[in-house]
Length: 416
Ligand SMILES: [Zn+2]
Image 1 (cartoon, rainbow, N blue to C red):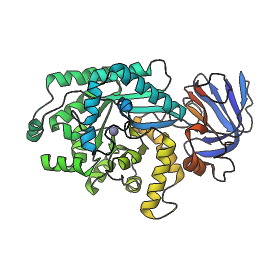
Image 2: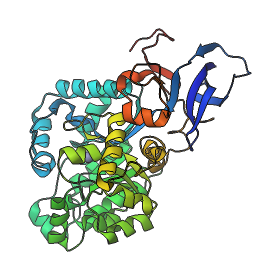
Image 3: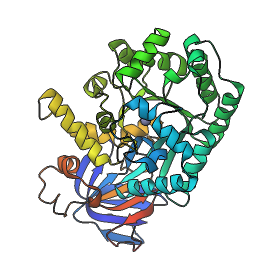
Image 4: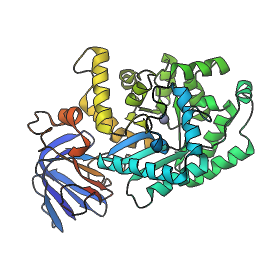
């Protein structure tokens, strides 16, 4: 049992601020959280005065695969960069040496851990090989990984226009193999497949003995929205919801009112990527509307090639942008934003029984933020300061399932 004492904690799903409390960790789990001192016996007691304990961040949408392509094609349009199979990114991934791809992904994994991200959900391109590359990069690193793969072959324009064909046998086989290796399937867009193909993806995910996740990007830009309407007469969101039946959607930057109602009716989660959307200049998701509709909204950082995976920045940007949009200094609750970066991701993944909250029985994915540092000291509102001023260097200790993965304080003498 290790006990961190005299510390501040954002505890439970309501994020109650404990000003002087303890967190006891045993066998990879949080054994107890409370005020004052821990009465039981402990192997190690650590005085964590001045720190704030928060749950590890959940980056609910990222593409680690393009870590070696930072700012490649900066300023280009979304589809020129990202559209499979011949967007700049996909050409880069095909021609780049495997060792470089692995090494770049590993750098991002380390970067995520050092800024408090203990769980990520990756959309992995390049089929089976892409998953192997990510797994190689993960080798020996302790971080919760959810890998959503996709076949590397795509349907051609004529097939998509006709919208009749099923997935070719080879593609279906590849998709089944991906499900053996990964946690589910993450598609680039419903626009890349026929109605029948989308139904096939749905069927193979739902028919598994162990649950597999299914997700897709959707309505990211006005252009992707238009392609769907012109080709099928239906919106991208409608096609996703009707044929794919995903567990969650990524982006939803430009939903119609009907789209929103469909998503809400089916209780499908949404992962928004506000910074990536802004860098790509595609718009900003109507997050206030999502919340009004009762949707579970999580935060993701999207492609590493365009945006760095830093959840402090993501929360801060979301808050500031909404305030600008609404010309109001209290547009959205700070707790709501913090939940998007932690427990809402867990909910969307169906992992809220173990992840996203500092509470008894949950996995010990903990981040210790040093509130004695110059940029955070003298705060009058801990959560507001965390969101407005938090920086990766304030993260001094990170624990994943009870294992110390970063120690800048020297409590465990393992360094980084
Ligand atoms: Zn994405």
